[in-house]
Image (cartoon, rainbow, N blue to C red; front, top):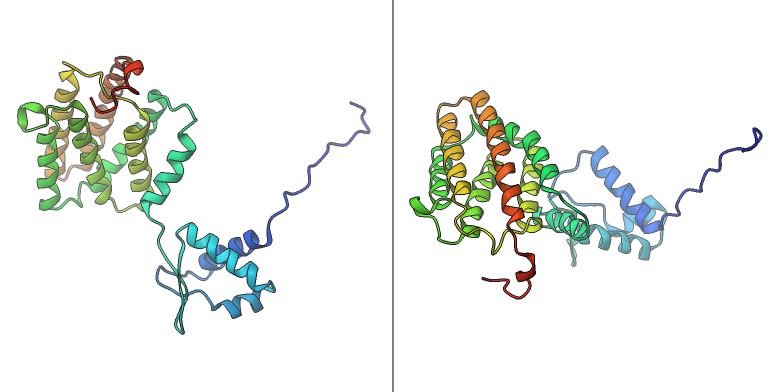
Length: 258
C-alpha cells in the first residue's frame, strides 16, 4: 500500500428515524431515572419534543411495546407506561440466537464456575426457612432413592430448579439473570434424552453436593457455600460431558418422548 494511501472509513449505518426515537426515549428513561409504572409523555408531547411525525412516534412506541419496555393503552388516560421486560422474553431472545450457534459444555460450565459460586455466597444470608425447606424437597426429587422420578430428565429438572430457586433469593438482578440464563441454556441446548440408563453417578453427585450446600446455607457460611458450589460445578461438568457422549442422536427425532 502506498504511504500516501489513507485507510477507508465506512460510513455510519443509516438508522431509521423511529429507531432513533426509541434510542432517545431509552436514554431519557435512564437519565431521568424513570421507574416501572411511570408514564411516558403523551403522544402529542413526544411529537413536539422530538420534532418527528405522528407515524414515527407510533412506530417507536410499537417497537418499545414489542421489546416489553412499555404497555400502551387507549382512552382519555391512556398512553405508554413503562414496564419491566419479562425474563421469558430475555430467554427467548437468547435461545433464538443460540439455535444455530455451537454451545459446548466446557464453555458453559466455565461460565457456571464463574457465577454460580458467587450466587451461592450471595444467597447464604438471605435464604428463609421456607426457601430451605423447598430446596430440601428438590434435593429429594433429584434422586430416585429419595422420592425422585424414575425418569432421568425429570430428576435433572429438579436439579436445575434447585439452582433456579437460588436465583430467586439473589440480591443482584444481574447475577441472578446470568445464572438463570445458563440454567435454561442447559435445558434447551444440551440434549440428554434417551441416553442415561444406569447413570446413577449423576444422581449421587447432585445429592451429595446439594446436601453439603444446604449445610453451609444453614450455617450462614458464605465462604464455604462459595467453595462448595465451585467444586459442584467441576464435578457436574465432568458428568455432563460423559452424559452428552452417551446421547443416541439418531433416535431423538423419531422417539422424542421416550
